[in-house]
Length: 305
Ligand code: SF4
Image (cartoon, rainbow, N blue to C red):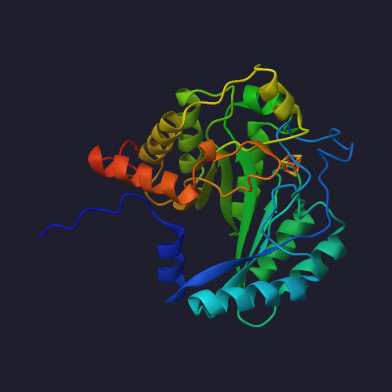
């Protein structure tokens, strides 16, 4: 009997295959900022950025304390033995080099097998990349870089403070040192259409980016995006359209790219718009059901030339 190919290349399965057992990410929240918020590039940041800077599900405390606390929770629930330390909020490489190095080293406690670092494409110095290449000899290092969309007009409109070329440059420089990259993408930014969905997917594929993490736009109170939303100046596509965009994205994505998420988790507190008031896992299940019904799968339309 012929086995059907997997609908998409899931992160949990990838980690299982790579490490030979289940591996869980443990979030770390640091008291940081971002050059797009502190006035270096802009004040206030991306128009959708809230006070948490992309982190809401973790605790305060030292890096080791946060990891131990989260580790105990995951061990109790999933009996896991290996973990990835995940520097989640704001721009984790936007600190002086010695502090960055100290943060990474503080995370290398027992049972940690990898380090994942969220940052912007324009905040990756040669020094930081060289250091991470050294860490990568012993630990599984991933750089989670915010792209959001390949459409540089949209990047400008949401005040990202970087363009598409900055992302390409960051990926090339990380890859020259053998570092893995995960691209963070928002598939329903108000100014994007399905052409942008396809272009973003193709860009990630041709660059050989190893992982992708998809999110829906989360609109927070007291942000520029929030004001635009409340005054009716921007529209959010329907949930059905979001699900179709995810499928279109996956169809144009190289089958080699590992997919961390199809939709993000976000808190409803402080939100003006959050995942169409629907649980993330219901949206994920609906996408999978639609893919099964239409025989869609990751890489269906991707052609390596
Ligand atoms: S790059 Fe990230 S942390 Fe910085 S302003 Fe944009 S969303 Fe916020």
